[in-house]
Image (cartoon, rainbow, N blue to C red):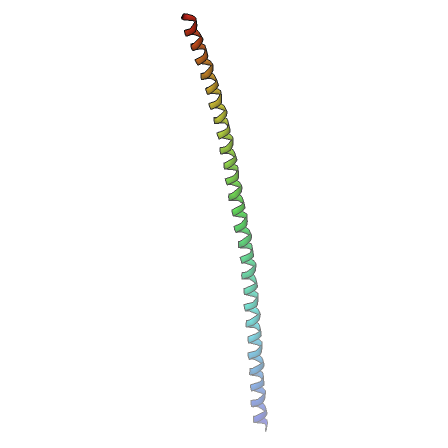
Length: 98
């Protein structure tokens, strides 16, 4: 009887050990999954921040280009006005000579 009892105790001990190892393994996998999810969320945040920075840079660049275009338009209008003024002066000079 004592041999049977020893075998039963050993089998029960092995089952308990197997259950403990299984539970520890499951906890480890769950913790790794949690860390992976947290890292993925951090990566998402970084990605969105990078896109926002890039879009801000594009908006700033577009603003600068618009300001340059506005300055060019003003300069072209001033040159046109100057040329019109010169043309009127030349026209008047020609009229005075005749």
